[in-house]
Image 1 (cartoon, rainbow, N blue to C red):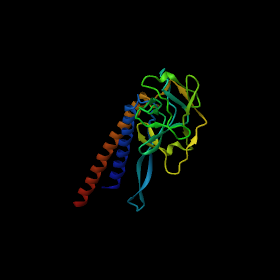
Image 2 (image 1 turned 120 degrees about the horizontal axis):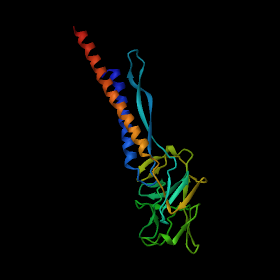
Image 3 (image 1 turned 45 degrees about the vertical axis):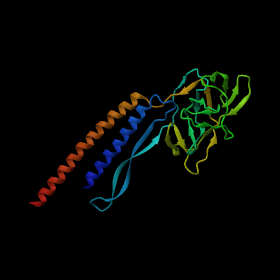
Length: 244
C-alpha cells in the first residue's frame, strides 16, 4: 500500500472510531451520571517511511472522557444521590476498588447500600454502609451534603466515601458507570463536592450536539473514501504508464 493510501486509510479508521464514540454517547443519554466519550485527532510517526525517507506521519484518534457536570434532576427518592462538583463514590467490586458518580442506590439483602449493579458503596472508613432498609423504604434515611447517612432519628449510619483525583482523565472507564484508577493514582477526599439527596445527575451528553457531530464525521468519512479512490486510481495510472 502506498503512503497516500496509508494516510487516507488511517484517517478513515480514526473517523470510524469517532462515530463509535458518538453512537455510544447517544445510546447512554438516559443513563444517570453517564460521562460522554470524547476524542481528538492527532498525528504520530509510524514505522513507515515517506518518499523522501523520513518517517511517515499518520492521523490517529485518541479517546478520553468528558467529566463535566451533568444536569441534576429531582426524583424524590431518598436513595437517589447526585454528586455536585468533582468527586466519585468509592465502591467495592469483584475486581477491586472502583469509582462512580451513579447515585441511584438501593439496599442489598444485608441492608448495605449498593449501586444499581449490586456493588457495595463504601464509607470513608472503607466499609459498607448498613441501612437495614427493605425495598422501597428509602424515606427512612437522610443524607446531608457532606455524605453523612443518618436515620430519621439522627443516628449516624456512616459517611459516604467521596473522592477526587488530581487528573481524573487518567481514570479508565470500566462500564456500568465505573472507573478504575491507574496504578499510582491517589484518591483524595473530595472537598469541592456535595451530595444532593432525592436527585440524580443526568448524562452530560447532548443529543443535538452528538447528532451534529455525527453528521460532520459522516461527511468527513465519505470525503476520505472518495480521496482514497482517487489515490488508488492515480497509483494504477502511474503503474500502467510505467509498464508501457
